[in-house]
Length: 138
Image 1 (spheres, one colour):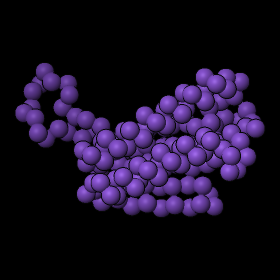
Image 2 (image 1 turned 90 degrees about the vertical axis):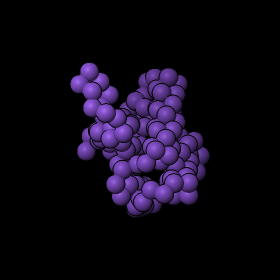
Image 3 (image 1 turned 180 degrees about the horizontal axis):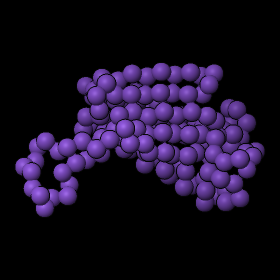
Image 4 (image 1 turned 180 degrees about the vertical axis):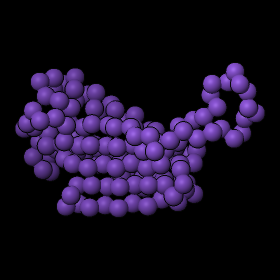
């Protein structure tokens, strides 16, 4: 079982504000920018159950790998992926920033990860979450 030392899977989402170039400048418009994703890092193990039986790790891995594969196969975005299985780490970056379709895919992954995070908290209230999602502005 997991110790009370906090979460074991750390997900860091890198994003920035980008001006909306397809809009006419309007001083009254506060939506002149939108967040864009530049990439994400995932590292660690949940230690929810023994290796091979850990459904939290399996769910996070499935969401992350499916997102990476979908972006590579369904979009024209240039990306880089560095995976270190021994360190349980994946580093994913866009060459520039996520295009529209890739943005939706990353956002969908985040929604799934947040559901896992919230579900773990509600069902195991004596421990911290098994996943920590961090958003960093770059």
